[in-house]
Length: 444
Image (cartoon, rainbow, N blue to C red; front, side, top):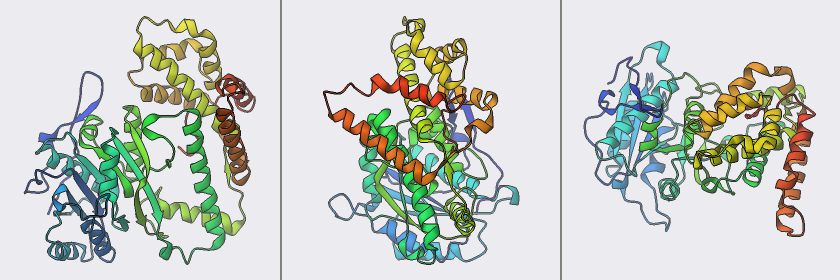
């Protein structure tokens, strides 16, 4: 049993990154991981006695890319039972006996009320996985996270390993709602949900078309959530671990990864199946989204998103900003004033004084920190009313699809000028609608 109010201990290195100090982390388990262990799977649970058997069964029956049984020595599972009032711990122990080959660690936590939330539980579990993997060498080791109401696909571990072996730092897998759990959802709610998902997917495809990243090419999705996320042990320590927040701790980790310019892969091959329960265990999750969409459908409320022009303009500005920053990083003799026209348009598009933007570009240690600095300036300077969603979601999806078709056709037709030749025009058109284009969408 673990009972403590200790928080992870961090230190800053010379580059300004917060690093997790392994030796000062609390020790929650006694036996070390096996030498062949590459993946430490963590599952924070509270009162999941009913769901846990299916969760553990899925992890115990993992197969490799050929469909053969995956070596149970190549991964371990750590269940952290957070202030349970049912028999979750007893069920976990029974499952350990039922699957003797599964490397299953069980931690029973009794936390003070003010920190007895999923954010703290997931942090404790991921920190313990990091501490354990440090005992056998963090290089090529992975910390993976899922939830107590979620079943991983039979090739989940194998698919994760395949992605990390390509050189990425973190993976966000696809989260699929169990069809059997959605039968009682009103068709109108399903329609609202599908429109919401479609907008996110189309926006992600637009990013791949206009600001492609080799490590996260299409096909990809948009999710990086606790039910299906993973991070290399080295990167976890580099960014200081999982932030201690009550809600949306997975989003907070994602933001840390972006600040560090981590290579994040949104893999459609890494899949889990989760419940569509309407009573969530934390804010910001699927249950809350379904509740919001239910209310909207019942009242006939129109769902608004940012205009497609703003979505496109933001991606283009980020691409140009990334290019200018990358050139400066690769050639310190580069004079940013040589690119006055580009930086002038970027400054106007972002609503940032040109001189200030140049200073931000020159001093940012990572592109993620540059984006964060500009975004923070925008948040304090831009009229919030001008950034409110303005376009009905179905209309936005249709217009985004049309733009994607035009972009794809332009890239295939060598007789047409490349899209980059019209990008500045697109940005200027977007500028006519708002004072400044936000580097993050309203959803962020």
